[in-house]
Image (tube, rainbow, N blue to C red):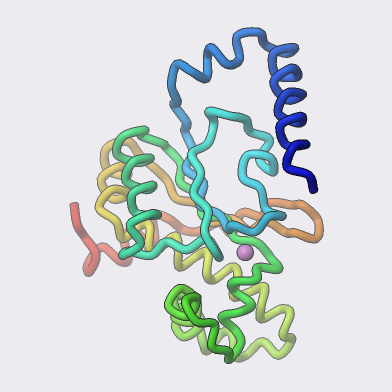
Length: 208
Ligand code: CO
């Protein structure tokens, strides 16, 4: 890959956008009002806007290794607070993907240095769902299921935040868990029972 090509591509992209809408960049310059916060994996194969058919201005994006929502990660928590409290998004999505290297690494016994504390959060998901996961004999199936359960637990982590609890009460914000199937390109809705989880964890995690 040649870096100079990136700038050529950019010129081409500007022309394409202006051909469809000559005011495209004037509109973008006015500000953003996205309705969706997308929290996904940093994996280069899993794009955010592209796979949802959305464009600039439509989705607020945060990506990290294995789409984690960790309460002491200032980065993800700032993104959630800004998107929910200030941009007032109505939908928050955690999108995992099959073939996730972060989830795979957490299934293996290896010292990965600085990645250890990050991946430990995925090992915690394994521990919480150990009984279900240990029953799955096929390693690939187990791996896929851990990807799904990790998405589910990150949704639970979102629901534990004051920002999400308040926005649910004030304007009906919802949390969704999805998985991108890297082999087919399909986006799968895990149909996370947002309201059920919220009700269930409120006894302990109620903040607002
Ligand atoms: Co990944």
